[in-house]
Amino acid sequence: MPFITYNVKDNLFDNIDKLDLRKFEKFVNDIELLNYTNKAILVFNKESNILKKLNQKSIDLGKNIIKSVELGRIKIALENAYRALNQSNLLELSNQESEKIKLDFIKNLENEIELSLKTKYIKGQFNAKDFNLDVKKFKDDFLEKIKLFITSKYLKGEKINKIYIVHKELSKMIIPTKGIREIIFKTKYGPRSKKLPKSYLEKDFQEYINNYNLAEIEKVYKPHFLRPNLNIIRCSVDLMLSWWLNFPENIVPTQLKIVSDIPEALHNEDENTINNAEEMINKFLFNDLSKLNLPKIKAHFKFIDRDTFKNLIKPEPEQVWTHKRHFIFGSELEFVFSSHYGVELISDKNPRKLREKTELNVEDDPENSHIVHLTHLIRHLSKS
Image (tube, rainbow, N blue to C red; front, side):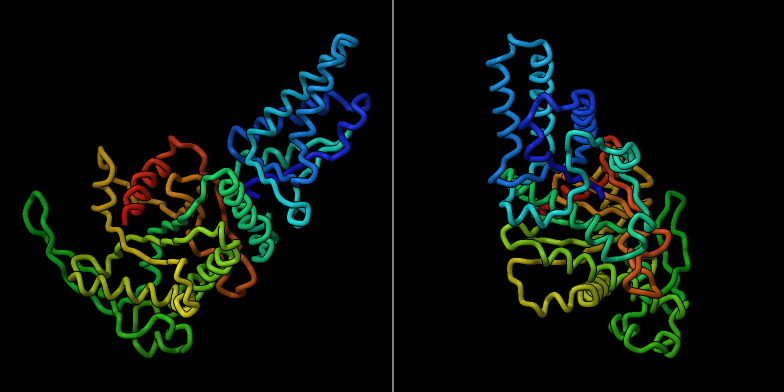
């Protein structure tokens, strides 16, 4: 759904006299609008290359253009179509491969892209109901479309090698806390004290999922929330991992990085404690992946504290971490979408269902403050 996949009927230009020029020109205009926000993928097969057919038909008409004013209009329409289709994300596949792709629209003599469908793709706003709350449908209709986009970039010689998930609150939801501690921090008015929750890192996080009562036994803070939160995050990350690992070997992005803020429970803690927490999160999220022994594939969780993030951007914004719940594909932010719940996509009651209030937004405005902030952050992360 983040991209509309389309093609043109092979025989559309066989009998040019039957072409409804008004509808065809409207189709071309629709594709231009979708291209403007990079939302269109033209899927075509090598054996029957629609772009070559379109170009050849235009050349053939040029030889007879003097015979008819109408043929002149059709030639101009075909030239505009060739230019518009060529500006879409191009996915040229074998006949066998292209037949496996689910197409949203196939242009024939009569049909038009529905206004509601076109508007949906241009706005790039989706919710759980668009997928009937079904995880498989979300994977097929949303994540697989991103895979097609990544494939089209690869075929263009622009391989996307890195995927980033930036979710501020993720670490806060994963790390158990127990008790209160007092920290001293500096202000321009002198030292001040503050009471904060204390992290509790005595148990592997997976143990809280395996043992239903462990959080209560260990007397961690809000034990009834910890297990569901861990389960949602684990299932959601597993969804992304399973999708990621099903890429063809030559196209698969080789790195997945998940980034989160250092939570209050770790503020002013020593480096060893913070590193230990980071390692525990990595083990929790990627332990099964590490067992697969895939040397070309790397997944990693990393803390980025607020001050480090702020210092990457001049002038330093105050709200740099606010509402950062983004999925980023490519170090140049080739494709970005935000999620209202960040990585937490899966229902806590049924791993086959999406969270009912899931909202996804394709972020394609380079002037958007989140995109500006993330551009600096990804540039920083790409160096590590």
